Image 1 (cartoon, one colour):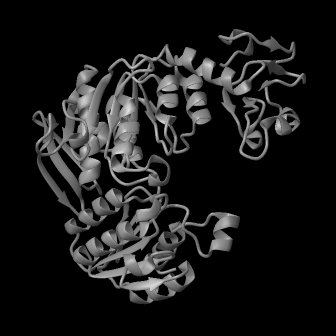
Image 2: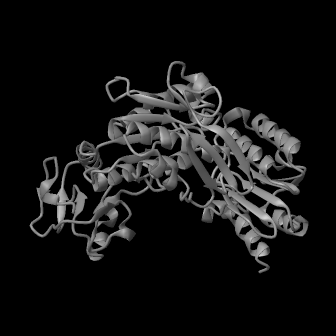
Image 3: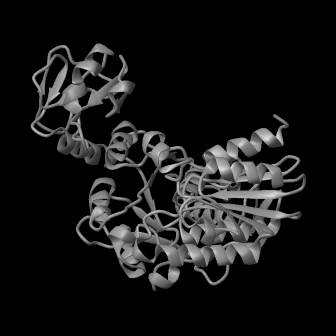
Length: 429
């Protein structure tokens, strides 16, 4: 329980405040078990929703307002982060994961191997702080995804999370609008390899990222410090061995296998049994949109949650394991800066060399596919008429891509719409 009278900072505690099971900064999630943290937002301060949270029965509200059940502080955000740092200190092991692609996959596999608690998909600073507060003293390892999109953000995250192990999965063109260049991306993400005061921490980098961090231990396959052996990838999944231990990953590709190697390295260094870790790895289920394979009369690969050039290349490479006609459905990759057209053209050219039928949608549709469509409805009409039994269809784009600019602004509909339509067609709906 989270006791408002036992927080590690000075606060005025209302006499009616009571312990909570967890925290939220979304007043719609407040309940008799969920306390509300009133944080500054882009448009509205959380203080505007304090009454709503109290009406929902929130055990306490972290705020600077003088209201019932208040845990009153001068700055709720700073108090939240101080609380998180204090609770994080009780965790036996914290692994932080960043990279231009593959963070969520690496998080899922590392957490399985370590039998750890891990961050959900939503990984903002407040979300990470709430996670640390709720689980820091659980006496289990914690795995935290640490994504950045601006200069200085990794330093802020490191100060909050203070990972014992820093992991970098890949380095590629992503968030170039803010980070400027590949060198800038590598420099900023490399902050995870140092503590809040610049001290080195245990570092592990994926094979693709190793060239950017000479001297840091690497993992994966091939010329790496810690490698898996005898990798085989088929439509049924990936298999390999690690230090003699066989690993089977159903419906997985090379990216998942590399993440599994990371998990096994972490498990071994934590003193865990590798056989047990391998069994847990075989049961990993990644969130929708992260290379989830749906077999059927034709196969759908749902990789539609997000995209960057390095991630699209990896997804296209994974298609090589599948027999039958290969179809790619690619949408715009966001935050690539002034070189975005050239980067989309390069990805499209790579797709044309790997895939039998290429579709593009939205901005840069012509660069991404031979069959280009401005909107998702137009794409769907063409795609559903084209797909045949035995095909394998990859759907990948940044999650901000939508039906039209107007609807995107209103609803944020992404290419998950295409995935759902394909699965309906696959089932004969």
